[in-house]
Image (cartoon, rainbow, N blue to C red; front, side, top):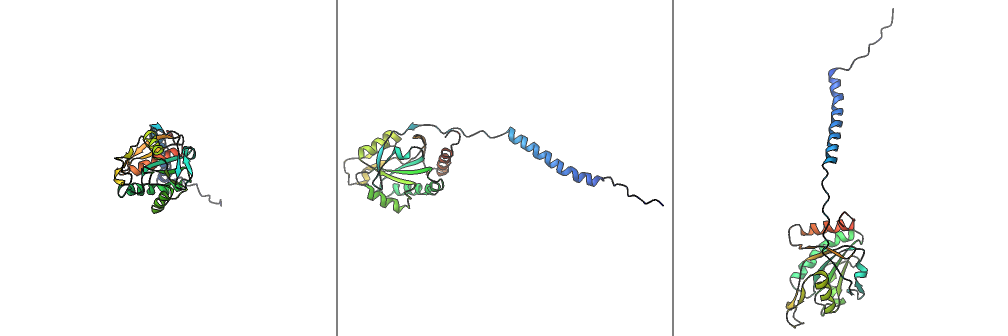
Length: 220
């Protein structure tokens, strides 16, 4: 008697349908990939170049010369304050303090710089105490002073930000005025944006633009 041999079983319809499912998924994925390549979102437009900050040398809160030479090659954010200001400046300084964690995370590639617009009163000691009040880390955040003429030349002519004094009463902080916009400066000392951080999304926009410059994104 001949031994019986099992005949090979042909795949049934249910098995064939199971085989088709992964093939269908692969086809769909390939199709989506093709669409993604075809409809890539355009790159963000380059940040504008608004002006170039001229060379300057002032004095840091540590009593050392500090200026363009120390900042060139880094992306940096500037703002303008004075330590006797009772209302607006503490708010503006708290906003700058909110940027400090990101500057620290970027390992020195982003620097924060606060310019005093009341230099007759704000010497290194006053600026040091003011910085400590807001938790400033000197590794990434500098406070600058100097003569009134040097500060005004840098702030008004360099940054195009208003500063000055109404009247001659140097002892009255109410006579001091200045702009409150934050200014983003690139590695080549070019101004790339002005930011009102009290506007909705202002902080996020500033940090996003700063990181574009730090990372060398298109337009930086």
